Amino acid sequence: MSRNYNFCAGPAALPDEVLDQLREEIPDWKGKGLSVMEMSHRSKEFVEIAEVAKQDFIDLLKVNNDYEVLFIQGGASLQFSMIPMNFLENKESICSYLDVGQWSKKAIKEAKKFGQIEIAASSANDSYKKYPKPESWKIHSESIFTHLVLNETIDGVCLRNLDNLPKTSLIADCSSCILSEPLDVSKFSMLYAGAQKNIGPSGLAIIVIKKDLLIEKGDLPAMMQYKTYADSDSMYNTPPTFAWYLSGMVFKWLKKNGGLLNQKIVNESKSNKLYSFIDQSDFYKNDIDKESRSMMNVPFLLGEDSLNSKFLSESEEKGLLNLAGHRSVGGMRASIYNGVPEEGVDALIEFMKEFEKSYG
Image 1 (cartoon, rainbow, N blue to C red):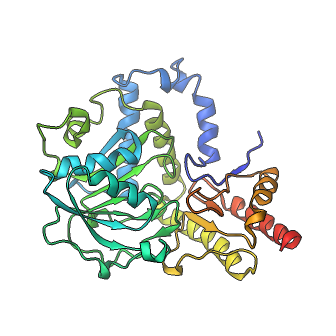
Image 2: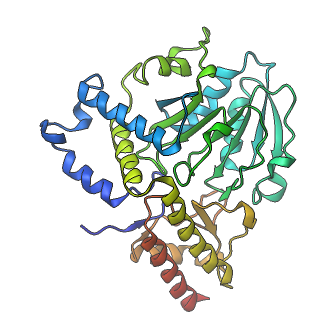
Image 3: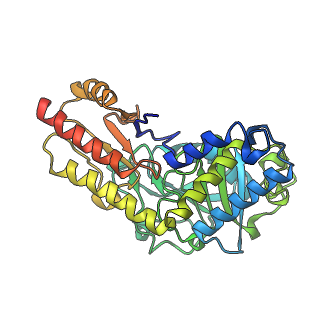
């Protein structure tokens, strides 16, 4: 079977090895005569699948016993609402947000429905091309939590250095950088990530939350409370079983291939190659501050906007898919998540060289 290279920002590329295993297991999982998609989520078979996936995720990130790991449907965008609903007492409660890109703006918009929002730092005046350093953040003294998006998928910016994070209650959206490299969970009160970038299929979010934050709120619907999921092993209702199962397969693949330390080496090699090529070119440009460049999402502009459609059509003919930049920023974007092999980045660079020769 021929496979193209998929640079989509999400739903994103999955490892070929995982897809090969999935193809074998879909009609008949381990001789049971049915697929995981057809199993009861209460069956001993699926409970084992779920428990193993959760433990593998914990192992990869070295999550300690102070935290609970939850699997919640609805993706990361649901968390934009669940976070203030669970942690703010009333509409006068104060929380701080970093305004560092398009997903930050969406999170802030939702949080304003539930409390008073203070902007601890913003890169809006820099057109979201430079991530504010933690030393510059101004966190309100009465903030219940501070929310940040670690990697802004659309804008291609990331907080790469976590050494000087404030010792306060930090909640981070890690959707487009989770499992790309080791991450010190202990610096955060809560992490969350939509699955459809570095983990698995869409429709699932994984939450890493301190156990002391799992407090019941009687005025909230059960499905909107983190404690509900913690008390029921994330099975209060039927969870997204296929997404959970396939995510578990990706966790196994990561562990088999050297874990997150090795994944960081691979991802740094991929991103360094692509940025280096762009930087030496007079035809392509990445205008993100170099210290803020994302390792996962690489936006770039062509010498002429009029060539954008030609670039996309010719790249697709070469088997290089989904390179269009987000409609809000334009240009191109290569999302080079864990599922994109280094050979895919090499193929992209070779195509970009030829395109520059033809049109530059």
